[in-house]
Image (cartoon, rainbow, N blue to C red; front, side, top):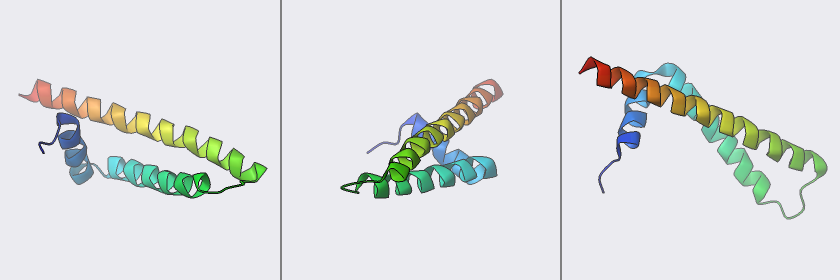
Length: 80
């Protein structure tokens, strides 16, 4: 299957951009913890609050990653 442009940009940034790598790592940690929390049959109030907070943090990081990807693409387009 062919990689999409988005996938290619993400791969490039993972290789070249330490800050992007850190964002991706943090996003993965949040994803892992959210998976743990969602598998709980009866989460406590604290766990429900943690899940809600993590979802917001994960989305904020995803937005930051997307923004960096757009900046990278625009830089590539203007560089060619």
